[in-house]
Image (cartoon, rainbow, N blue to C red; front, side, top):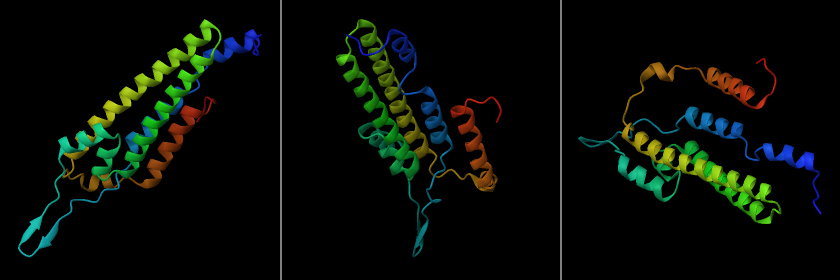
Length: 176
């Protein structure tokens, strides 16, 4: 005997348990996360100046071994933690969907959970390759001077933009 009524099951099948809104908000936070790295590590040792150089290939290979390690290598700690959390969340969701597919009784439920599992694995692959590209580009642009123009954006403006994006994604009301 089925514990769910037929109308409730069909309505719940339409809703995805890992919403696209959360993924979009995660991507927005990943894009606007500020880097906490210092400017170049110029130190004066007597007559010579030692400049720290980041290898793009090393950063990319680190991220290939462990997602987020390349961002950590580039001194982007917040982005690194977001990548690790996103990857673990997507793998956890894929594992959950797989368990639910194995436990489901009807073919419709099995197909629903399999599709969601596959969707989570595709998102995982996308975030993984984005992680590799981000680590490579950040290491390539390590010494790039962003200058005073980009640094003059007030923090209150960034905070207000994040609030507006959050409200647009997660709130159902039409007005901001």
